[in-house]
Length: 218
Image (cartoon, rainbow, N blue to C red; front, side, top):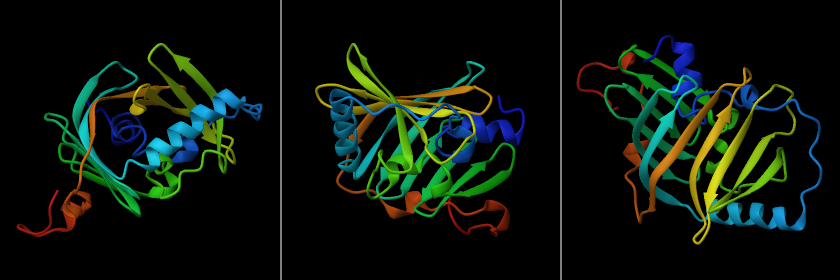
């Protein structure tokens, strides 16, 4: 399933979590100002995301080759997330608030990126700003919700992120990441529920290659 470490970074680490933000941004011209109706949807999405302090759920991911994987997601804003892929993937992605770490037990690899350099920071920030740094290029109304497409307003590389939401109630239902090559990774949230409390240990991921037996946790 995973051919190279580079492919695992770009297409299997939730798109959001592992690919540097610069590789996911569009070189399109500056977007026109949003209409009042579109801005209202953006404001609704921001209010929902900022209210999503702690949550857990499940997801299904489809990579550019059509290969699907699934797993469990844990969010603890600001800054913390855990994406635990089900076997036989061997992939675990954890944000501890500063770094996003990607461990692959099958390939025996471990890589880390600054959270701020990944698009995962878009909805893990303490204050979500879709009007500063991030440029909203499109708002689409769907039959049962809406989607918001955005890019980093300061970068020139190609690519974008689209967040999808349901209506009544407003809820994040998935996202799509397009990289510099136009390859799309889609994540569909099959469940995402707010919870009262999550163990901080879920958001600790140490490089297993530097640990002695019995140390640390994955």
